[in-house]
Length: 146
Image: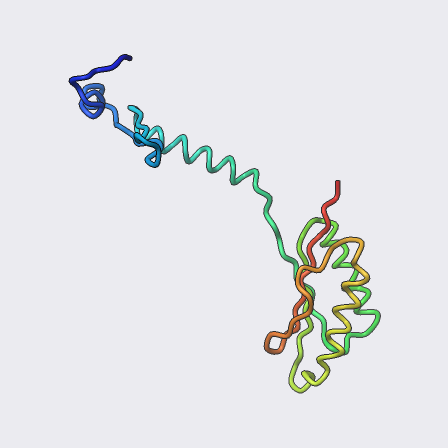
């Protein structure tokens, strides 16, 4: 457009019925642009929405065990865990201690470590078994397949 030494950018923007938008305030001198501010916001929202759509959504699936879970029940739940990891979901496996079963903390930890070792080829342990109140929790993240 050219340089207007006597008129400021603000008066030029007012003449054109547009807004003076500061693009990068940290630059020296700050970079401004004459444009329609509402249109600028709309375009920015569109860009943010497109980026958000591309981002992968992580789902967390839970599997609950008891400290004295039977072998058959364990195998059944392990198959579900395998399916969840193959689908790309994180797995939260936990042992819930009811009443006085909290005395079997070691059994619960052994159960979770056994699960982790059997699912080693599908996922890696993000958090080792950790006791929080009446729950012993462990997180397993799926391995990236290429």
